[in-house]
Image 1: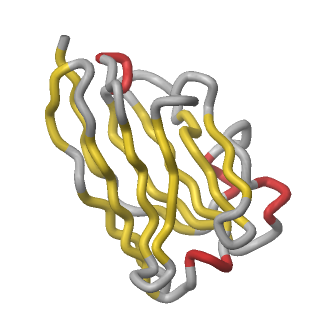
Image 2 (image 1 turned 135 degrees about the vertical axis):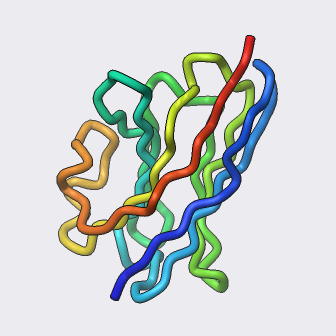
Length: 128
């Protein structure tokens, strides 16, 4: 059984940083398409960053490019999202997701529906 457990969310002021973690069990993250999504109240889920091919191919949403970095630690089977220069508009619930199928869909343009497994989410709140 695949499980994803996120942590690291919190409240920060604009310009601050947070690092989210997603510990996976039941599947090897380096063999999967891994993604971070976020959903703000009354908004559709947004793909933030994705990673596949053993971590060699990454994709970022335009809104976070240059500020967020997705990475993985294979020894810990953990996915990370380093978030710098945070803005109030980054406020959302952040979810880790895993897709076991083709990596052709492992890009932020695709919706969360292409993923097989989801974590419970971790809240990020950025104040101005």
